[in-house]
Structures are given as structure tokens and as C-alpha cells.
Amino acid sequence: MAALRGVKESLTDVRLHQTADSIVVRAGRRRLRRGLSGAGAGALALGVGLGVVFSGSNGVTPVSSDKSVHVNLAAWSVNSTPSGIVDVTVRELNHPAALRQALARAGVPADVTFGTFCQPRSGGGLPQINQVLGHSVDGRSVLMTIRPAAMPAGTELLIGIARSGPGTMLAFGLVKDGVPLSCRPIVDTRPSSSG
Image (cartoon, rainbow, N blue to C red; front, side):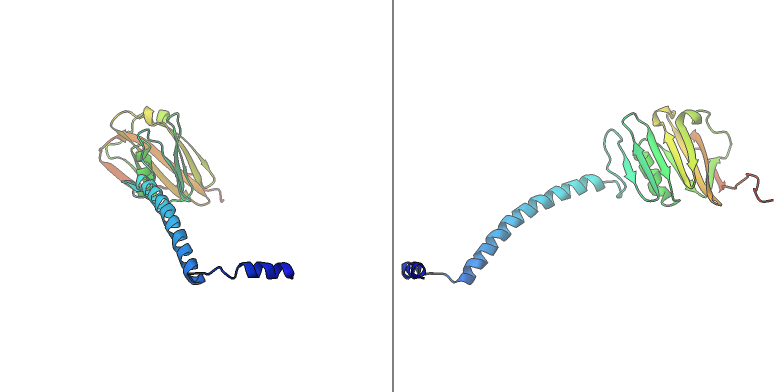
């Protein structure tokens, strides 16, 4: 107790010229200024990043000079690889226009339709389709491997996907760009398994 009395007596000449409330307010302002400068730098970085992502892309994917595209949605995915291959997986038949746009950014001009297939009115697609597109159907998902470098200049890929019972059907072709197309529903021509 004697030690505490000694400390109390030594502080009797100390006077506080500011209230405790004013000290707390000043400290809060100082913290706010420091926080705002850090937040401002963070907001600037975020703004620049979002500007790169969304400029001219309608929210699909960033555009770069090497056509690197990585769009992974619940409905479908488009991913380009360093070797120039474009991997496409379609799980749901949604947003064909956005899928066309993502493919175009990856260097694949394509006409994508769900439930219908378009083909040239004069008939006859180009024979290079097997060099351009590899495909498989895994249950209700369509997996495609596209080689844009194998597409002759001035051509586009035609892709039609439709649901058929528990499965999925894929129709595709390669045509010269700008040829008149005729579109029709994709019809399952496989024999019925009931019987």
C-alpha cells in the first residue's frame, strides 16, 4: 500500500490538458486516415483489375493477345491450352451467345445452337472437320477438343447440341464463313430401345 501511495503522490503534479474523449476521437481519425489510404490503394488495384477483365468482354472473360481463355460456368466451360487446343465442355444448354463469344475469343469462329443444327443451304460441309474437332458425349455432357489452327481461313465451326431422353446428341460441321444456313431441330434417329 505504501508503494501505491508513493506513485499517487508522484502523479499529483501531472495535469491532463485534453479530455480522454478528445484523445480517443483524435486516435480514431488517425486510424481512419491510415485505413483510407490503404483502402484507396486497394480500391484502385481492384478497379484496374476489373477494368482489364470487363473491358469489351461483356463479363465473359479477359481478352489477351495470346487468345488465352478460361471461362468456367455451371452450364459450360471453354479453356484454351498453351499448345493452342481449345477444350470445351457443355453440361447445360444455356447461354449459346456467350459460348459463341468465348469461343471467338479463343480463336474459334463458331455458330453454336442448342436444340437445333444449322447447315449450309447448298449442302456439303468442308472435309477438314475431323482435323478441327474431336468429341465425345459423357452422359449429359459434351466434351469437345477444337484445334483452331487446323481451321482453314474464312471458315466457321457449326455446333448443334440437343437433349435426347437421358442423353445428349451433338451435330457439327465446318463451313465457309458467311454461307447461307438452314437450321432445323435435331431429331434422334437412333432406333428406340423399347419394344
